Image (spheres, each protein chain N blue to C red):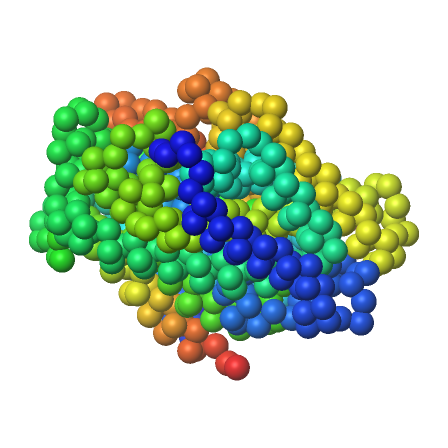
Length: 497
Length: 59
């Protein structure tokens, strides 16, 4: 990548960054409530976001800056296998349609702000509530750190060295999230998503023209993988199970994260969520086309120091500098929205399921809002310190484990929407088995997402998170059966007395 | 379940999670190998199926 600073690109970048900063602070006045000093207002935007705001918010929060950098980077490195992000972000919406309106209704009826609140109300169990809350916070922290990686890639592409710009951007983000709450990312998401759409549409319609068309792009990628001797534009037969299980596991995990659930809970109605399940796939179409930027990197014969540079370098090489600046601003702003929502989601969990549960049960809604505001600052500073002082690989490994961990709250959060059969101790046991067993499997494999499974002659690699979820569910079902059996026997014994 | 036609949504899972259905190069469409355009085509198809379900919910 270029070493010197491009002033045109930098000016465009700074203009858009300043624009969203102003919007972030003004957002406190947007759809102004009677008071922002209430967790429903600060942390959920008043639970009144309609179809369009929800579409921009969930889209802006789910398709993160890191996605924009990392998906094309993976496709650039390994080919078809990196494309699993596409089936993942398609099958997630039928799941959202079938499950999330029920969860929203339950949260609304019981005044729940977090998934852990819902679980506590359903199972009357503080332990299960804590398990869900701790998992949520642990899984979210490295995800915020990843957004910082996305943002620093964009800043680096402008030719700026040093960590000061990243720190400055993050401090600004922390301040307006503190003052405006969820309204800030909801408002900024309009700008972010519009910019990303413009960038992707320009890229996928103009770049192939410069490189000889899509057939030439796929051809160049195919040649590059053959020359390298690994990867390919089609899957190898031993990748089938890995591809499908990664897609399924990621889709089931996606809406267990605090940031995506915050977007769901902030909606106005169950119908708003159903409508969004129909409309959100538009983002997936964009993501699928964006992934092809990885192949365009091969067609343009880019020389990269890291696959993560494929998107920024493509823009620098093939577009005028003002548009490159626009694209980098889109990526950096693309990091702000998810980072803000993630820190709000984690702060809501801390406030409701730790502070209110264990420190001060008498806290009033205004007190909750101020605890959450401070928690959101602490979470962001923590993520920033991780990026500044620990190796990048540390955040990536934790993010991988985070996906595995968050998947283990699935039974506790989702099953209660369909059956009252499960008891809290069984779900806690399942959660513990999935969490510990999954982490162990991943650890012994050298922190890889795939694990080799063998049944006699048949062996294949599959997503370790899904193996852990299966162990989780089996444990929960077995222990629940035993518990219910014991209860029935005791009951019969008591009756006989 | 039948009333809300939720079973329609299972088609998406079957169509995308059974990889042998689509791991081919040909036929190519607009330069895209089958593997790519097949999966991209599931985006509008899924949105349509979900919309059909959506219509069966009141208000």
